[in-house]
Length: 103
Image (cartoon, rainbow, N blue to C red; front, side, top):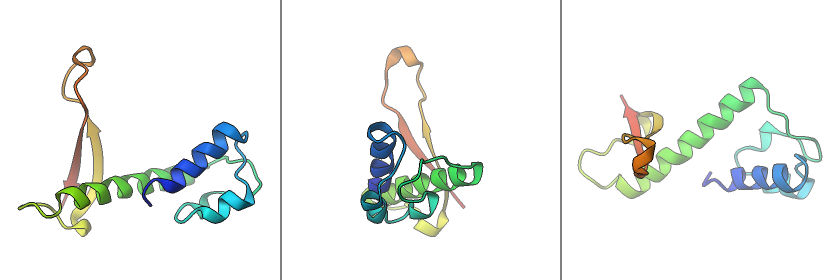
């Protein structure tokens, strides 16, 4: 997932009153099991957890795509979590940093 599924779901929520059409549902590659076509999107707790896991996996894949060739970079199997941190006060408006947890 390169966030394409998330884009489709967001578009359905914002522009189609939370209903993902059958045509859009057929375009979902990873998140198709989270909702049904032509029904209102209403995620359960377990589905929200799955959604967050999928997003973190996509972020980890991007991290590895751009830094995997560097010395000391973890293998994808070693990454167990991803966090977005902001180490400066909000008034400084510094960019946020991505961090991963590897075992």
